[in-house]
Image (cartoon, rainbow, N blue to C red; front, side, top):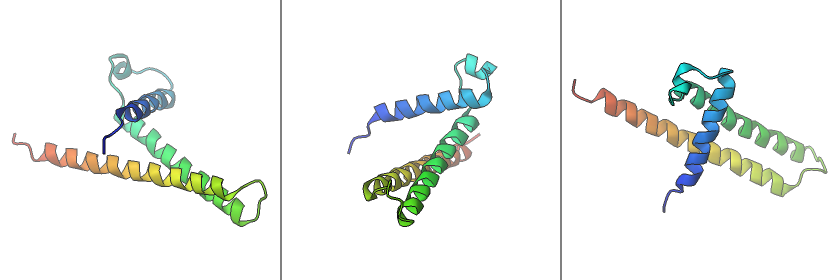
Length: 107
């Protein structure tokens, strides 16, 4: 199974844009081409949280009998939330592995 790097590049560009918006302007690190990793990570976590909240909300509306919500929309939103959470877990796993690699480097 090959990894589609186009989606990763698109996600990285979205994270960079969200980081710039959250920062409220360009910082010296951003002007030098660097990205504020903490802000990008927070923006990504906020997006995952928003997807999960939207999935919960549409599920509650469906269960309540709202005629405007159909089962297909519920399932699609729940799958989007699940996939975004799984992706975030994989990013976390990679970060932990990278941290452990750095900590195990000889000085």
